[in-house]
Length: 121
Image (cartoon, rainbow, N blue to C red; front, side, top):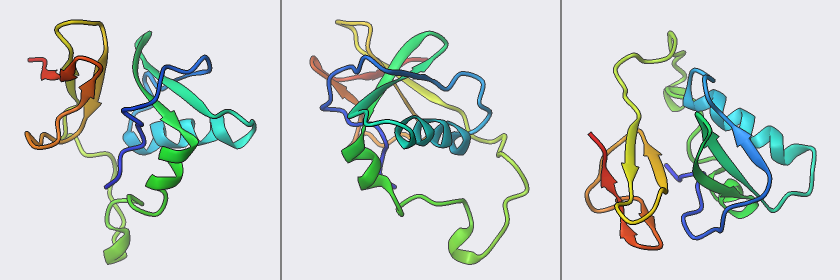
């Protein structure tokens, strides 16, 4: 699954707050809506007043058609949002950059200008 976040992009002036949306799919819809009605090149995604990443038109296009809905390939309908997932928060020791993931892969940790970020426990 491709990430919507462009780790190489600079923070954008336009912000999209996804606090309290309830699911990753709802957060993605909110981000896509921001691009639908404008010519924005990028948006900074905010959670609880903090920037968590930048989504660019390029990263949005790259992610199209790769994620979809859970079970779509098997023609299954999810019964609702899974309560078995936790959002993982990664931080940088040198700056206030944070990143969020739903999976942990030590080969592909989020990065900022200072290098690999650490999982906050």
